[in-house]
Amino acid sequence: MPVSVVVTALGWVGAALCLTAYILVTRGRWSPTSGRYQAANVVSGLMLGAVAASSGVWPSVVTNVVWAAVALHAVTSLVRARRHRTPSVPPAA
Image (cartoon, rainbow, N blue to C red; front, side, top):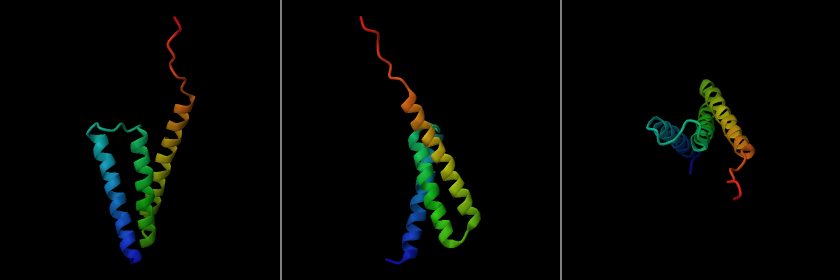
């Protein structure tokens, strides 16, 4: 399989993932602060950045890498918040 076919497929999958995540947030199915949404942004940003890099479209590379980095920071923050959350235990009777 030629590299161009793989790159094109990667671009389509990344674009579909990004748009699907946006649609789900817009329709209220996902929260903008959800791990799923942020993880989709990390993956799609990296995929689209890789496709842009293979074509030498550097403004898109930078934009997508920053997009993925912001989402990765959000994922990291969500994971930290979950770790520090204390489980709610009902008082003993």
